[in-house]
Every structure is written in C-alpha cells, then in structure tokens.
Length: 153
Image 1 (cartoon, rainbow, N blue to C red):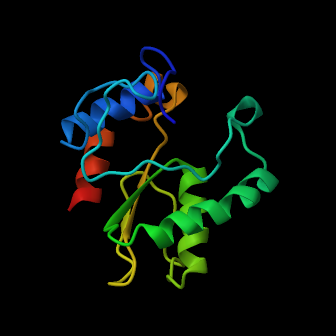
Image 2: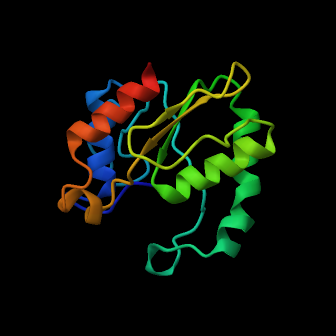
C-alpha cells in the first residue's frame, strides 16, 4: 500500500515524511521489493482492497475491520497510531472502542493527539496524504512532519 502511485502521489509524500522522521530508509517506494525498510513503523489499512473511486462503502469497511482488529491484537508493542484520513480515524476508533478504549472524546482534527490510557496506544490524527490534499495545500510536508512528531512523542 502507498506504493506505485507515481511521482507526487500519496506514497511518495508519505514515504518522504517517514524518511525525514527516521522511520524509513528511503524517501520513495514504487513496488514490493524495492528496498524500502521501515524502522519502528508499521503500515496497515482499514480497507484491504482498492475500492471504486477510492471511496470504500460501509460494507467494505465492515468486512475489513476484523483484519485490523487482529493486527491490533498481534502488534502488542504499539505506542501510537497515526490515522491518515477520516476513514482511518473512524476505523481505528471503532477497533480501539471494540478493544475497550474510551475514544468518546476523540474527534477528527489534523494534528490532534489522544492519549487513551496505558492499555492502549495514543491516537494521532492527520489528513490523508492524497494528491487532492497535498496538491491543494490542505496537507503540507510540514503538517505531516508535525503529526509524525506527535505520534513519536
């Protein structure tokens, strides 16, 4: 995921930010096996397929959420989650709630940080690094870098 979307796409924008934060060894990733190595980071998704028009339906999200729940249960060392976009934020909130976290005070706002207690990772929010968001300036490299700093602190 986040690979092969071409120059200035979401993948390049995200990987460059991960590289600046010291979480990736290279600033781009074009395909599996291209040498990208993440350090202290894990990428996953609420939806596991490429939905039509890049807009997953509620049914697709519901069908995929059990996989995200399982990942959350397997990844026991997670200290923070950076939700990239509203779909990720809502999906992570649903998963965390199903695992017993109180996410009632969490609201989608870029740069927001929600500590959820010792038993759960901190939830940090960012706009999605889509071309629409990055090319219009809604999400800048500095804004994503700041969200990563929030997630790492």
